[in-house]
Image 1: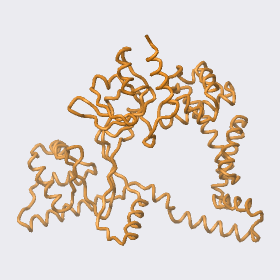
Image 2: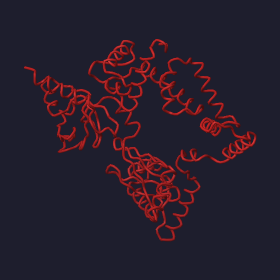
Image 3: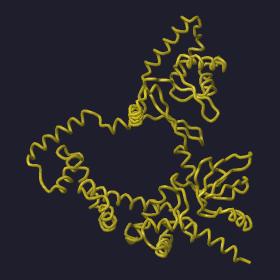
Image 4: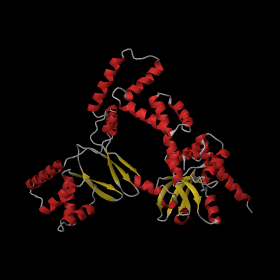
Length: 433
């Protein structure tokens, strides 16, 4: 489908839906109206047009999703908007609010060739040794002050020297994005050699079997459980036993070569590198453990300790949440009974007969209602949720009939549109014979 088959107005609508669907997989008509600052009647007309063109899945009073064709089209429009806005703010030093308004108008009339040339010019300014970001900032200063640098040749010389120094030393941003600090394999060999000597001097020398287990643990950077290390080592040497593996892990922890920690009722072991600190993210859904290191976090912790006149001895940051792979699995609509404790979701539909729908609706659980799961395993076969100020206990059979989508964690209350819809449905039921 060619881009010019949509009017500028409809392009704005598809871009708005695409942006709203970045936070959650569905959008609602009232959210689109608020995003664009238009009336709901205009939104209904536009949604019908986009649906006819196969760009969205739309049914009145239901959530709106993008088709694959609509997602590609929305991505192109959004990228074009960001490219124009970036050129106005970064190159021409235009105020961000003014740049946003002008980008909304320009994105509908600029040819692809002109937009490509703008991107090339911005790239040229960034890479040219006599330009760069500093030069673009200088243009912004010139626009504000209305005067040129008196000694241009000196300014150029200083700019070149600055860029040369910048190339010689990694930027803070580059160092901030580093992976975990690297530990050489030679270090692990030295640790194992030292451990053999210490155990021998203590009268408890390590057997060849135990050395195999210790060497295997040190050669892998993964978080290991007792069973996973035993199975892995047993493949290398069938004589390895579970008891020997447990004994070696105990020795490694005793000598501070390994560290044990608990997650989801399971004991994990990892290398202990005091000189190479890192933190962890734990996925409470699939059990994945992700290591990360960010010097900005370390600096903030040290700075706060100094302000409090506190001597920091050790620290550990553990973040619990849901990993990327699990989020992708959750992106589609699912049942309420599949939610985790503390998760915030939005009800999109009730899949049940009319009598059951009315019973669930009488509880205050209607499409558009925001719900927080307090417990996902109460009394073995129930879940506890909070909807507004009401706390409810639902059995599994009922919660399976409620279809939901995840919502951003900062969403705390219902929109006026949701409240009006709930009131209207209640009134309809009261008037029904």
